[in-house]
Image (cartoon, rainbow, N blue to C red; front, side, top):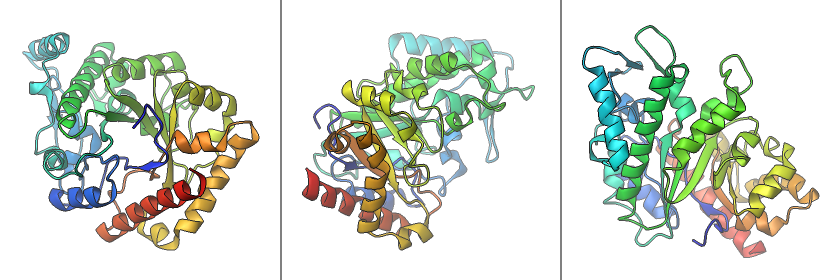
Length: 341
């Protein structure tokens, strides 16, 4: 993998429908030989839902099957100091992800494709995590400066721990921040300024030693990302194909500086996966890319600096449906490479 020249390499956003982590990892190893990713398995346990999965180690954290919250009880300050101390000296061991919270990660370290060109991991981004956790008074963590800063440090430690483990599979790591909450930018649900959101993203992205990606599964102001240090913008090209093309100048500049786009062109429901073919997805992808070429962006550059992914996670598909989506992605990559690259 040379920089961000992926040539439409297929990979996943993260979640899979399996309860058996070995089965999920075997499927990933079969199809995603170039850029495999460890599977999140929320059907296995509520602890594997995104917010809970990355909450371990946060001061005063309470994780239940229903939600994740923070309670600042006596001694809370010592836990807070411990996070900052670990961050300063890069001591990640206490702040990794346990097998209870990520069985797929632990299994992936043992079951993965041999000698892949890269390896992908993921964490929930600081905006979405901060909007999903409440404090003891019911306030959202993101609006408490002390808690929000501690959350950023925790996510940085999770990233550093992940990359250290994943480099045993490949020295070329790719880490995505999953930020579904960015779809609410500009609404009452997310009344933060553009500068504040970018600051939060950048603080965490700076921790990534490999390639840095952000995934958002809907419409947003994509300059939230193009104006940051992100290397890969991942979006739902299947359902929101036109959203990125509203920013041709910014995407052109993003590609010119070496950025890549992860085209979420494969469906993530059983019904849609069954209805699509490789030819129909190729038509949909080329149609999604066409507005960029009309604005002077080279088509082959889009392919070279592109990945293929599902539109979002696959947790709510059947196992057969998820395999169908992986198969469609791999065959689409092969077809596009053969024809254009």
